[in-house]
Each structure stands twice: as structure tokens, then as C-alpha cells.
Image 1 (cartoon, rainbow, N blue to C red):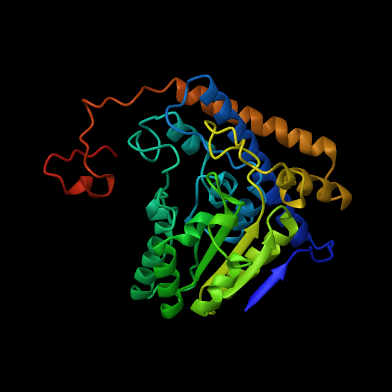
Image 2: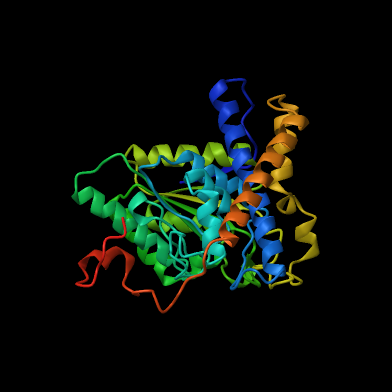
Length: 345
């Protein structure tokens, strides 16, 4: 059954609603500032590899992170900075990975967006985006076999990934096994530079769920209030045993695919449409209207986050670079099995 949610529920003054909104907004703001810093470092030649900004997708991403428990599983994408932070990623982990520090979670071995801590349920992404769904399925199924209950797995993909075989196979598997999967599709109108009209003929990507017997939702991805409601409800349903849930959030990427891309192919009419709204600005205006915070407090948060980011960058820039000649190149997860393993604890 497809549910379309385009307007926020009437706001209440409940402490839980207010605090959830404020918490998600703070992660959105921190993510925006962190991404802006990464973009500046990239332009200064301090980052090798791509930089992929989340501008325009922070509301959806933060809603995922704050809706999950630390015992859940999260498979984010390149534009899920806010969700990563809300799920518990330290700013230092992100900075160390982007700057290639061997002290980061990936030890400077991998690309800057392929970071995570699998043992903590935070999965490093695979660039073949549809592939992450089956990875989350695998973790959830393994937990089922171990009699671990009450956990949810969230996998994020883009609209382009819904055209892959991996999407079909994994969603079908999740439906058959009734796994507690929440699959979130950021329908940002372009798979890199390919418009959605060249990708699929259905009116809404959420319609694809019908063929799998999966409940689905279509949501305004620029509205934090709506995203929090829909994602929170979907997570609760999956946790209660109602099987996989599919969420399609319509929005617009407010930047290029990466910092190397000027996004000149984006239709100007889309930019001026409701899809082109800046979700951070929309959320800020909503909070101010509700009198849940004020401009001075937001400015204080902005200053605090900017200082935290600068301190993290300064610290990482003083750390030694990876030494390929000293690296043992064993897989991190199996290093302890090596005959030459030495305890670094």
C-alpha cells in the first residue's frame, strides 16, 4: 500500500516532538558546515579523491539517523553526512577518512566515503549502490539466526539504484523473509546527470513496492517534520515485525554530483520548484515559527560546530600520513589470524 505524505502534521508542543526536531536540525547544521569545510579543503588541494556534498538532503538523512537505535544497522550513502553524525559517527572519523589519516576507521586504506564501523552496525558503503541492500539483509538475517531480536536495518539508495538488479533481488528477498528492513530512496531527480524520466516510467518510485508486497511511502524530502514522522513510523513498523518498509523522498540535490561537477544539466525549473527548497532553511524557519528556538541560539550552535570542525581538521593535519612500507595490508577484520600479527592494543 502506498501512502503519500506531503504536508506536516499539526505541530504540537510536546517535549518529545520539539526535542526530536531540534536534535535533527542540529545534525543537519553540523553536516552542512562539515560538508562546506570538505569542499573548501578539496578546492585547496588538501583532499584526494571526490567530495560529495549532502546539500539538499540533510532533512531526510538526519531523520534516519535520529530514528535508529545504536543497536540497529545503518548503511548510508555519500550524501548521508547528517545521518552518519546522528547515528553516532564522530566528526573526527569523517575528517580522518577524508584526509587519509591512518588513525581513521579505515586506516587511510579506502576512499573517503567508504567509511564505517561494521561491528557497531555502521556499514561502509559499496559504490555499487544497490548492493548495500543485500548487505543489510545479510546482517539482519544473521542476527535472526543468532536469536537477536528488536533490531532494524536502514539502507539508503538513490533513484538510479532502483533500476539495478541488486535492488530487485534484495527487496524481493527482504519481503519473502519479512526482514526488518527500512529502505530509503532519495529521489533527487538525477542519477548523476541522468534525469529520472530516462530511468523509469512509473509515476512514483514507491509504486515499485507493490510488486514485492512491501508497504511504501512517498514523502516531501525537503520538509524535516514530514521526514521525521514517516521515517520514524516506518522504523517502528519494521521493528514491530511488519516486514520491510520502502520510503521514497522527493527532493533535489542542490549541488553537483561531486565537487568536480558543476550540475549544469539540472533543469532551472526544478531549481525554482518546491523540490529545490533548501531543507536546512525550511527547518530553521519552522523552528523559529514554533518558538522552539531563536536566531541567537542557532547562531551559537553554528559557531560551536564550526569550531569543532576546525579543531578536528587541525588535529588531523598534524597527524602522520600513512606509510605504505610499514602497512601489513591484511584485512582489518582478519588481522588477528595472521602469523605475523602483533598486538597494537
